[in-house]
Length: 251
Image 1 (cartoon, helix red, strand yellow):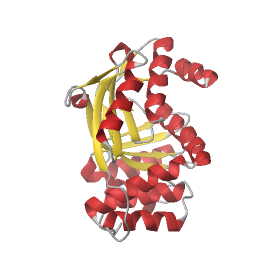
Image 2 (image 1 turned 90 degrees about the horizontal axis):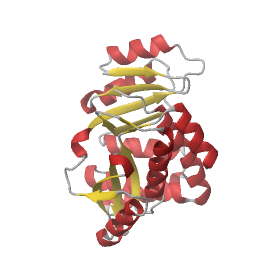
Image 3 (image 1 turned 60 degrees about the vertical axis):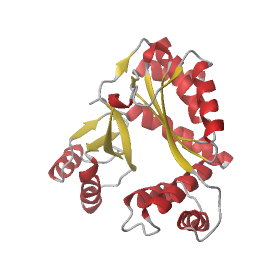
Image 4 (image 1 turned 45 degrees about the vertical axis):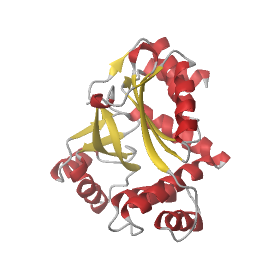
């Protein structure tokens, strides 16, 4: 299983930029609303809602914004009727992408996703074309500074984690979805500070390209993430240190 530490680093930086523009709160609010609509407004019994609220709190989203988003989901407040959609496609060089969106207008969203892909040589694909290349997993990250890596490994694996990967920037903990909450609670109970925790789509066979091609694909993914309706973009692209440096230099 390939580490996602570079993607996580990019997501952190992007979240900081989105927060400045207020865009992050909009995305987080939508996720909270959908989670509350699908599973109820109690985060103790709705794991998806709890994760969404935790993410919102870590981004310093105001409490009243969170409460309004929950109430929109439970029907206590009126709001736009959102639905979840997942689009599958290929970025240049055959890199698989999954695009998860929340939208009140499917026609608008699919047109925007298609345009972002085709503008740089990608294509939108039929349902099922690339989803088989991903596995739904629990994904937890821990910042390695001042942390006993062996302790993280021991606690996570004992709680049911499938894998723990360590890099200079991040400790990544993978689990199946059923064990995710148990692993998270075990880490928290051991006094280990969790940087992020989510249910993610993990590529089963990551794809490696040369650095120039990798940066091109990263730019396509960035264009998709800039779309207002898009919540998450997953790909099977494996990023080298050199490509990461090139991408950051061009940003």
